[in-house]
Image (cartoon, rainbow, N blue to C red; front, top):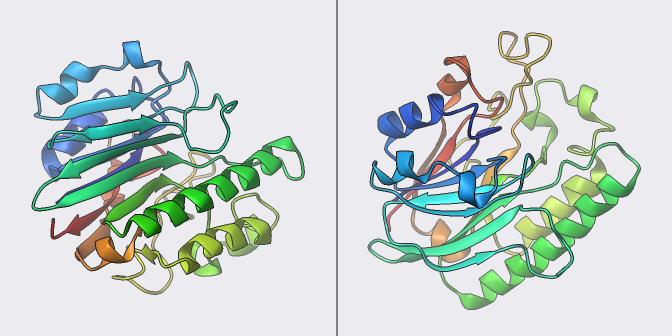
Length: 259
């Protein structure tokens, strides 16, 4: 089962690039971030005609997440547990079953800038809630994947110029510690389980020729429960998508699970 994450930075802006990538990469399950539309306006037909079942958790103009799956989507839930007042559309879950059932948790973690301030406080509080959800997933002892745009640079090697990000919410110590606490519960960073060292990025800013200079950061991640990690066969970043026509500033990352 090929499971992918892609921050598309607006479904309308990627109306041509996203279907083209789907036809080429042929993932079984895709989690999208920043769809930037309400559920009713999401263009389901372009995905359904390619054999995908579609579930969305949308928000007008901002945020928004979705799951596309060639398998039926079961037990769909929307919103990260722990705060009934949170109106930002950043979390969606569903179970897909191929050779075995996999719980898919698609997320768009808050950016948190500027620092300090309420947006950074919200980011850290959101990560604390995610940590509790991660604990619950581990307690279920079933294969699960938490994947999406984490807006976290885990280590210095995950940025071409780490010094430029030192005081940014994506790389501040508190952010990295919150991410590390989740990993240390027993999750596996799928990409780092297959690739080591610097030079692997999932995001290049539109400004200052970042793509041309390969001035990137790795902020899109797939975290696997131990039961899912046992199924991991491969994990790759489709970096060539950044060079395409009308690209997102993110590129897809995917894992192949024996499931």
